[in-house]
Length: 506
Ligand SMILES: [Zn+2]
Image 1 (cartoon, rainbow, N blue to C red):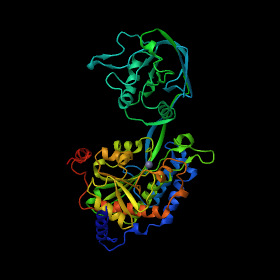
Image 2: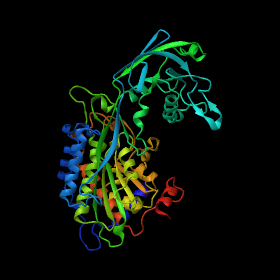
Image 3: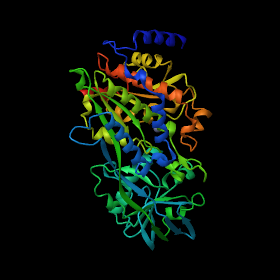
Image 4: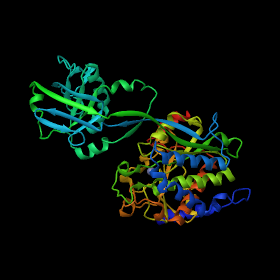
């Protein structure tokens, strides 16, 4: 440890603050007060937790676009604005639903969770159809010899071949389709999983946003079938149905809805200063969305404070993006820079996934991604570097941080798998060498968890001196990477190396 720090300090001295022209790089003159103003605005109560699809998120996007314009950034090719509209579908579970079978009543949100479909109160035959699975190649057909037309179908979770959580989630869509093809009015999966029902129920019984993918135009059709999960009141309560006993069930569901929602990722471009290297882009990203207000936030809240401000997550990273933008606009690095303020991160990295599938500059011209995100911090002498040691940029990372008095914490808290939990993972999976920088986190301890996705993560709790150093370091690290003679690449044997070779054809 000591050796690494002293070595990196020496390297920092080699990378002097001035460039070859003798000009002092603008990241050295970034004002702390400017950064504080950005952060206090982005994490203000008025932006209501910047939830994807909500007004506070749109206002944050407008603010970012205005900053890009004020600093003369180029818009993405072929458009006259800084937005990439991302199409989402909002899915709202039924407000009320119930199911009665075998003299037991099940209510939505208690031991019943209908996820899609509306139906007026309907009495119908109940049928048990094993897993509700068909795989002709494997000789499996749970509907063989069974007439489920107009009936309520009950099934076991998963498939005959797999009942682990992954298999269960993967099979859900196909099982719905199969039941619909068979003419069933409802498909109900019996919740017989190890995973706590309470957690499952609260996770799914709220509005969710999904990306509208190109080939999902018939999604309206799948909503005709009522689909959901039932937690038996006693273990094995459905045993008689399972054994073939004839039963009736009554089901109703209302208030289920789907609607299209747009949210904007914000993108600006700064052209590089080197005539050849400017054809290559370093993409600096930070998500600006957060989780919203009240029960949207997923954590405890009170009447006095119900806003999940997301000052650390990720107004800090977004502020660092703006600080770096200002420095690069004043004095561009050799390679061109894409500034990408991403929406839809908190709902599953959806904004970055959409960008990677629909890049506004061809992805094979993007040679590196520096992402900024963070749960919080517990040690302001550090900057955390997730992906350190993997792409040949370690010298730049050390030098860029050390010059502002920060030490680099390489890949801390490995048990959290942080690298694959932010937008850099979308770029890495597509092959782009990537790095994620976070405030100094030596452990996911009390100091971190008391703010992480909590209403307490507000601007007044931020160390603004640290925000200043953090931003300057990120600007410097990104500049040093964008100025490297050789473009970075995944190290041999890295899990993303093959994707990189494929993307860049090398
Ligand atoms: Zn985040």
